[in-house]
Length: 57
Image (tube, rainbow, N blue to C red; front, side, top):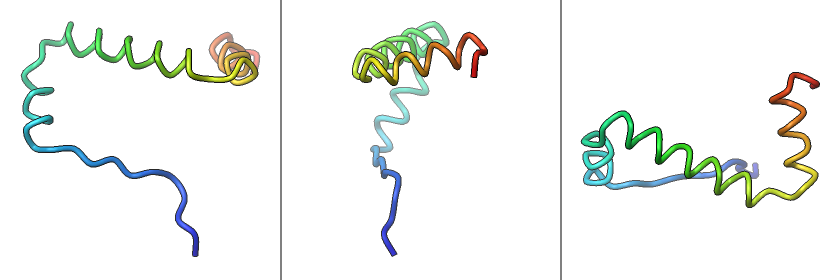
């Protein structure tokens, strides 16, 4: 059976470093990651995302 999805491995040190960030730093990191992912999407996927966000789908 073929496995789908993805795996993500991280180190204990990375988790500790993230836990030590302030709430503001975590939100800034999240916003930056979201911008990167959105800009990496095809235009058609961006359009779908915009429709979803606006409640059209």
